[in-house]
Image 1 (cartoon, helix red, strand yellow):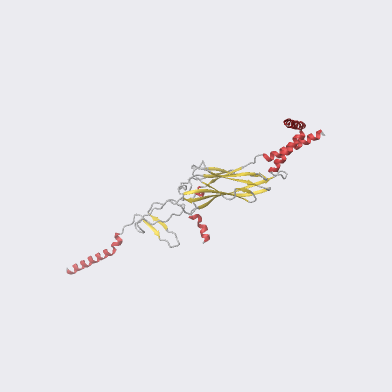
Image 2 (tube, helix red, strand yellow):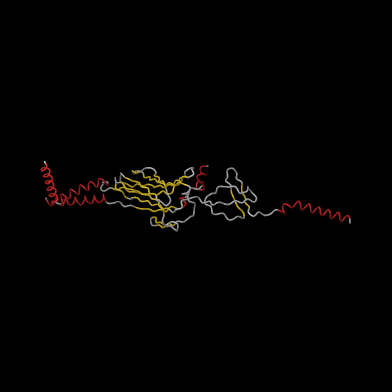
Length: 273
Length: 57
């Protein structure tokens, strides 16, 4: 009897001891939302992953890292912020107009327009030399609210007189087109090839470094022509003089009319004297 | 003599008018329309610069 009691006491103590040892594991509850965070090394950016969390929105750029709410590790919850870069909320198109042929010595205008694409927002199409181009509508943060946007254009054409030289800048306002004009004069016959550049400069309204981005670089070619070696100005002068001479020679009554007119002018002059 | 003068005059007139028309006719212009994709109207992203950064490093 005494032995049974001792044995029972021993078993009870053993069970109690085992229970105390296993309690932390048995009592631990699974976390509803768990955030694991790989602590960054100095040269690496932190990676943020989620478990049992809603799927993050598709990212187009890296997100700035923010620490989880309530500290790191257990039970902390962090939202994955939208990662779309701000952009201009408009569909835009570039229209470039230039003369493929130019008379030597004459000047003409090259025009570049950055305008709102009126077909934008649905499925815009544009023709480029016989091709159909389709665009896509993307919902993105408004860049006009956070930045001053400046359009900068430049025409590079070796051997040509281009005015103005260098880049031209215009503020790009919401819904407003921006147009750039260059006057080009070619002084010698031949083919001239050039590039029309368009950059956008983004200046933060809150201050900070300006960001510049190349949007377009379009190739153009202009041929300077002459007529029997005559440029535009010389051809006009020759044409005018030759026409007058040919009229006088070819139509004798025209010469008689000129002589009559001349005599009348002289008589008036003598009458006044 | 009068006939020669007449023919010469008319020939000079026609050639000169041709030259004058060539010098005065308005020049043809070509227009090219290029749509600007939305990605070109965004701020440059760090990923866009990463190849340049890696090359620099």
